[in-house]
Image 1 (cartoon, rainbow over the protein chains, first blue to last red):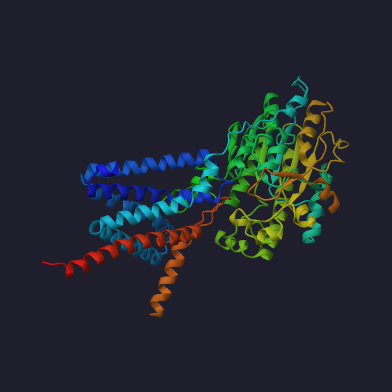
Image 2: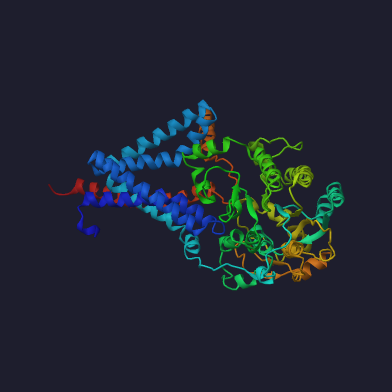
Length: 522
Length: 66
């Protein structure tokens, strides 16, 4: 094909291909670096958008200039601005005049170089750009392959619904389910940090809660732990269909979106309010009657991270400037208090990131400067101090919330406060947990580290105050079964307590049961 | 010279600075620089070959019978 073209045309095609590869380089790199978090659909959508923009730009420039070389030059300018422009926009948004000047000079200098090499030395420039593009994108192929060829898994669990009575009538108290991400168990707070949580738990006891002191998550990370608790069962039927080598966490997202407890509650006439986070799978729920989350823009995680390093960062900056992340927490608790006043029974799910980094609050609960927060990624001791301050802050706002809810609710209320995972072991944090995949071995880690990762906070408030069945439980898999026992008045079977972990984060479906290890730690 | 070097380093550091994302996805800014270096090394070989053949052609031209 290329042989049929004139030499000048051949150089232009080569240059166009090279520019297209460089245009998609960063997207390919981000995907290959994060195969566990990138969802194939999100990748293909963003790639389609980028391709459409590239083709549109090329056609538009060609129509205007009627000159292929001018068109290529225009595309090259656009790529230079796309790759270097984010910092110019950040500097402009923060009013740093000196930096604005610096980046302008950098971009203009790059544009001059591009103009010189394309107009004066197109033959060699075409080869260089094409080879550079092929090399930098080619390096991403192994990572991209895993994401693009991920199997389609029919992830659905209905064991909880099968155990419920067919009759959907019964008591309809509001149900509030709060998941404070990475909130450690009471026993771990004491053992690992010498932190006494009794002020909080004594208050909960006094309000009528049952608080478990040392429960363990059934699975070690949010995506897999939530998938289990929200469906009120273990994930074995789904895990059988996922290859152990699959890296992507997204296979379980359908279980977090379309979960059995939601279906059963909505079938009983409940209105579902979903209060999400910035984390993709719980950011919003497609089945909720009402969603509330941190961001007004509908970008998925991949698009957001991608745009943050392009000149379009100003869109994100404007969307997030309306309310700071810590101000949004107030909005969320206010929404819960408002919803429980409704006549219709309410199911409210809140994935609370208050106890999860980034640590956005000062010790007194005021908003922290986020630039300062970046520091904690590098300083384990400062990070631990901030974590404990955030536990205390969550305790304060949660107690205030619960007291308000119990005072204002239009009907009885069931409340659960259950973390999905514990804080990260020190060795894992130091190995670079912030940057994704590590070689930290979860199974050969010290028993105390495993216990730390899986030790979770769990507390339940039932209007009947009948906790006889709850007391002996050691994991949260039965939380929704306890809730439906209260709702239906029938002894829905409780599952045996089991805990699982994977060896490495990059093979999250290669799970082994670790119940015995955890009991040994006790 | 030292001033120019310091100014360049400040500029370079500022250029690689990226805002913190509230997401698990690692933007991999550092990895991009490593990849760019590998890509540059590969293209350097092509450039050398190109200029080498040009130099040889020019050299032969000097001694070619007129």
